[in-house]
Length: 152
Image (cartoon, rainbow, N blue to C red; front, side, top):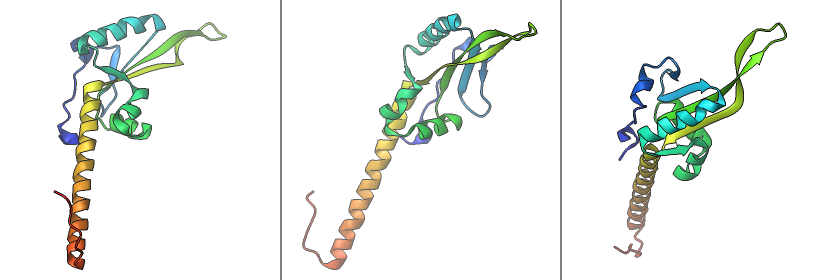
């Protein structure tokens, strides 16, 4: 399976036309902003839709075997589906104006089946590269007249 054959996962149907949940342009990154008490409902809804097929974004580099930068680049490029909940709290200015302000709490999740498919594609590519390298080395040895032969 190549990287291009990874099947994307759709968000819950009511999120697609939602005014609350936004999809970042050019990606499959769905973001909802709200108070912390809405997070539990958001996560339950997402968990029920995907059947528990979620993994925190922080765990993906270890799970797939890539860097955090590679994960972020792939999500930003639309190669993986991501779901985020950004916690906002009500802030009152000195003049009494109330606005919602983002806190440092942000919960990012990716679809585990997409991460598994990405991992498998990486492993396949590495195996193909290794076989090609061994093939080239054996051809070079034969040209030099080496008596060493690989075990089949």
